[in-house]
Image (cartoon, rainbow, N blue to C red; front, top):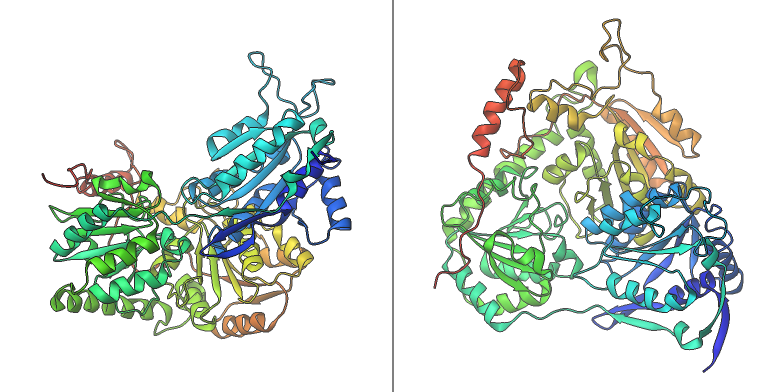
Length: 635
């Protein structure tokens, strides 16, 4: 057997560079590269291996230096999403805090079902110098390190204690990364001493491997059952989730809806599955949905969920579907999602199932009166959005400030159809979900499985890496910007163009609004001085976020009026580099109401009148919540 002598780290890099994914006959490299921040745990191991690869095989595995370990994971995950989960990045960190910084990113990846390979360094396998710097010592276990906290947030976890374990660990990692059902964060830990240890590897380990991404076909009987239920419906509704995008089923969904006349409500991940002005598109559904989609959902007698995991925002905490005998048809590649709400399960690829259902429903369409009904509701919502985007009095906020609605509207109007909007946390994800008029399937990128503050800038880099022919608009509030703005430095370093629209509203606008609705009076949500009263109710803090962005190396345009904002966006689009548009908005003017609900418990007893009132409202909504436990079919 032919062998090659390499360190464990060198073998890992060489192996990753030879991995490919393939679907529908299209083959691509699985790993676009490796992000990394070096410390004593990985600098002489994976760091040396990446350097050697860069010098000897420049195209093998590109290395990118990040500024924050969590942010690197976010960038990798955002990239994987732009590539429909067919490509991703590896992320290398040092031992200790460098490793545990990635745990939040791992949770985000796994919750959103997006592949990323994490390679955290670990303490010595041979324990020759224990206790090491940053080593966790437990009196009850000698084999536990801080990296064990990755276990519950990883879809696969392994630790390479000996070189002989590496092939099995890497092959298992690839299996999970390329599995559309099981994918998420994959963590393989590398003790420092093992990374640098040499071993004779079989050359076959480094041969090119192609991992086929399957399209599970639906069972004919399952399609027949689903078609029968859909045919029986008078007011059916499709809920399109991220699985429609990941399976490349946008065209199949369009054909299905046009053939049957069934309207579509979209989850956060499913937004863009139909263009905003498509006749069957009702836009966002659920707690941050449109009034059109939510009104149709309330009356729907059959709900066809396609590639959705039915999060609480999508179902308005199980209050969205109110028809007494509502039934569910769930199309999902993952059984865990297909069985939700006691629906008829079609465990299969979304594209294949939609094509099968379209054929099974040939000649069937909903009544014209139903089409007329939902189109009228949609037209009403379109008028609502237009009024929010283009108010009769511009700069209608307090002190002549713009409203966030106006800011979103101008970006929507001034961006090109193929441009991408990126967001994750605060009030903007909900506002974007209901207001943003998506014109291209890839034009909307909001992370809302984990809704992680700090994702925005890092995620924008991932989108820019994955879509270099599109402008990327990163929408971020001051609260989330302050969490993690450091990757602007990486954007400058790598020459990545992102347009960051930085909205300054002096605090946590989203939680402030939620706090007020729950009777907590926006407590602890404003960035203010502590006053003589001892409370945080003084004047606004003199935080200059524009100056902060400038210090990170990007040009910044400070604007206040609608005219200035429009000019700044146009100038940013003309730029070839990353830039920031800084605008202050009025945090007290929100987006139009969805006429929906989100279950956030309110104190059951309180001396505050505001909390007492909020609790009464909460109880009224809670009474409408439904368990959906009825049998899927009657026999």
